[in-house]
Length: 121
Image (cartoon, rainbow, N blue to C red; front, side):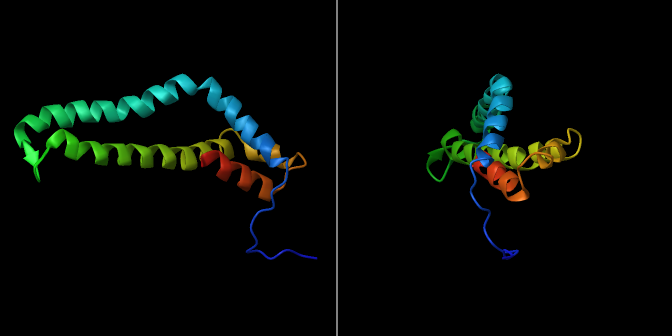
């Protein structure tokens, strides 16, 4: 019986191998990843919040640093997620050809998609 093209990916245990692979790679790069994910918003808060905050004063009764912090944190979270979801997948697809190697294993496309989505979440 043929599955519908619009069906959700099936969860098979082999998809966990992709999550484990991504974790091993991330563990190797964990230091720079954490430093940049916390360092970038901190630099924005220091530069814009303290530097520009002296010129702006308050916004709607809030200090400018407080006003700016929620936007900087949200922007940083969105940038981190989109970078992990797009650039990392592109790197595994084109220069590294990791997905080509995965397709030579018992994994199918559903396993790869599901593993990547769970890892990105």
